[in-house]
Length: 76
Image 1: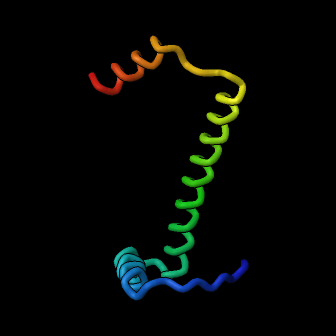
Image 2: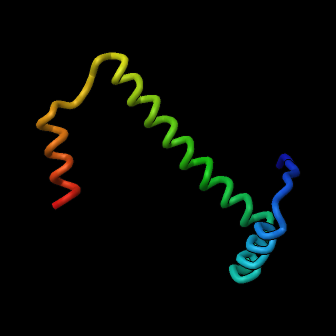
């Protein structure tokens, strides 16, 4: 396992320690889980953005009708 030292605010350290204590896990384990979750989310978002950019550069766009169908799906 590699060790990386980071500085965090006192408020964040307190929150981390509090949740670790309440969850009965070590601060290190909780921090690792939190960082892993954040990185997975960021990697997914970046991959989706890159895919969308590739589609746009290739001229692949959805039609007005498809856009309206999506809009209706999320506003109904």
